[in-house]
Amino acid sequence: MLGSISWNLPSSLSYTSYSFLFPVVTVSNPTGATRQYQIVFRIGKQGQVLAEYTPYDWFAVAAGSYATLFPVVWIDTNGVTLSCVLKEKDSNTEIAALSTELVTAATEIMQQIAQPVMTLLTMGMMMSLLGMGQA
Image (cartoon, rainbow, N blue to C red; front, top):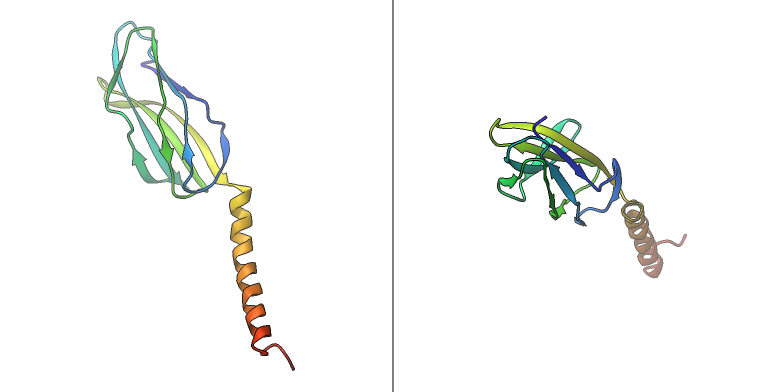
């Protein structure tokens, strides 16, 4: 194994679009040599990659050691999968990955439901004021 990755995000997370996420990512190097790594965040839906974000350039982790990273992730949608992929430079491969499902937060669901209801109520009030709702 050329390296491993862990983070503090659960497998599923209630998420509101345009919110910031502050994952704590730990990259471990179990080998006997210093290695260069990079993390890549991917946003996907139904197996399709919608976007990629690389918060850091390649960074070194000493043999038998680890590095803790504090990236900031901002996503403009929900109902997607956020993945964190670990790449190792010498082998030029993706060696590990984690993911979490960003599900629609209850507050956002309520906003989506409330918006059409408020529009209908506003239209009903306007019609009433104009006398259009009377027989």
